[in-house]
Length: 105
Image 1 (cartoon, rainbow, N blue to C red):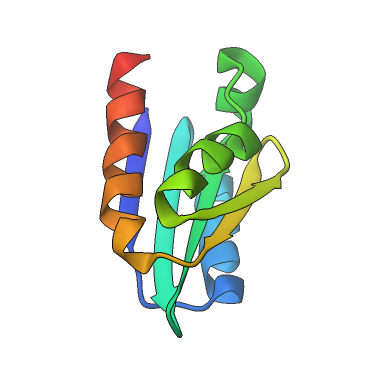
Image 2 (image 1 turned 30 degrees about the vertical axis):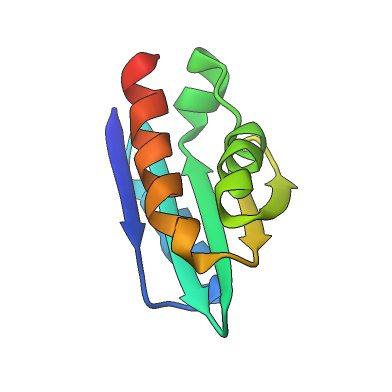
């Protein structure tokens, strides 16, 4: 699996553009990008189609679980989902949880 988790300095539209570009170019992609802006945190999860179809992964479910760490909520489609929260200090924990959950599966 190609796992990428990072805090980036981008707006939500740019993150979505990057996520969709990487989804088109990368097989077995599990991408988690986070950003903090104006005291708010945003998480985006993108999964390649093969992880959704063959492995039963769901970006909406994953982002909802991670959102609790930034004191927020979110959702979306099985292949791309976002969450917003009011606690940017939880971003590092959310990225670490994504990686820990992956290693347990």
